[in-house]
Image 1: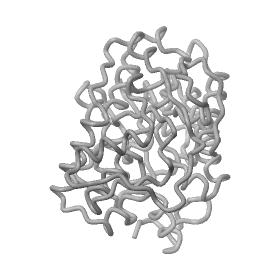
Image 2: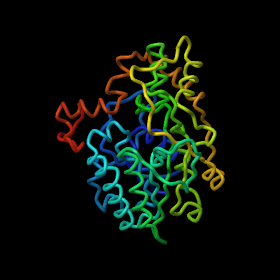
Image 3: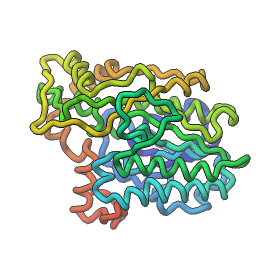
Length: 345
């Protein structure tokens, strides 16, 4: 297939592109390259691409594609809370507009990178795809709004699928240090402390970005009738953890590290765990291979090999909110997260 991947130069995109290419698909990217200086570890995949804000996509950009994989978004709660209207503009309104244009351009498949965060504050129940929603952040709510809009577009000619990804972790050429597994491991390596910023009591489903990428490939290649207008929780049911249990794993993997709590650590209202059986039962080709412990071992080895130090780990290279704020201070981004000049400092 000829596939357009939005956000291809980001955290998940750098993992997804090689798998799509290995599977024989022709891949084109679309990205505003907001994080092009935030590089770590493996090489960034190189594909033909459009340097464009997803809010500015035109009909002609989408013509000739069999499928769109839509990753581009404001990717975490701190950045989302910085300007909630910008989050809704990018994550919701631009995503819906993209899908409408894709449908008009004759694109048959639209794979939307949704999130289990739309379940929000859900208690201790294990939730499948039929569960009710209770998002507690603009990020989570924006994902729900897009799913609702895409259902209205679904028909015989346009087939959307909703991948509700669990909380991501793992190495990437665009490594994020603000995700819980990556973050706890980074603190452990650079300080000897597995630093919990909450009381660690909340549940969270966790999934490696390579397994998220495998899910996209499996759904892209699946018979239409199996995935048309369907949501899928992406992860492994057994990989639901309380955050304090993740910290314990990190403490066991990183030599000499101990679990500690930040001053004022309190419960996190984001609390949910999910059942991911549906995707594996529907698509036997999707076989996730990662666990949190295996990834902590991977991260530990990579951090040590690259000589990671605390100042670097806490810098804009790994912390999305710090990168965005510094770009605003430098006059590269405005309050709506639009570029004010062509290049990133």
